[in-house]
Amino acid sequence: MRNRKPIIQDPVSAMIREQDVRITAVHAIKDANLLLVMLNNGRLEFPLDGFKRLAKANEAQLSKYELLPDGAGVQWSALDEHLSLRGFLLMAMRDMVQRPRPARLKTRNGSVA
Image (cartoon, rainbow, N blue to C red; front, side, top):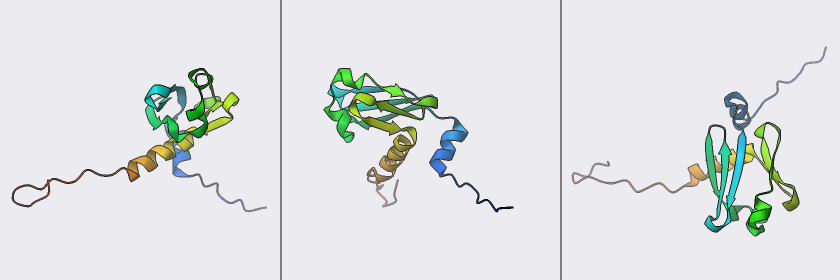
C-alpha cells in the first residue's frame, strides 16, 4: 500500500471552488482603458493597457471572446490571449494590497482619527 501525499490547494483556488465563483462575461472598453470582468457574484475592473495583446486590439477583436468551461477563464483565440479567473483574483488582491493608503487625519489634540 502506497502512502499518498495530501493534495494541497492554494487559498485562491479553494475560494473559487468553495464560493462557486465564475466569470459570466467580459467587457473591454477601449476608450475608457477598462476591462470589466463580470462574475456571478460581482465584478472586477482592470486597466486594459495592463494586458498587452488586448490593449493593441480593436473593439471588434475585443468583443470576440470565449468563456472557458465553468467560467474558469476567458480567451481571445484570434489574439492568442488566455486569462484565468484565478489570475484575475490574484491581480485584484495584489492591487488592493499595493494601493497607497490615504493619509490619516490628525485631530486638533494630536490624536489620529
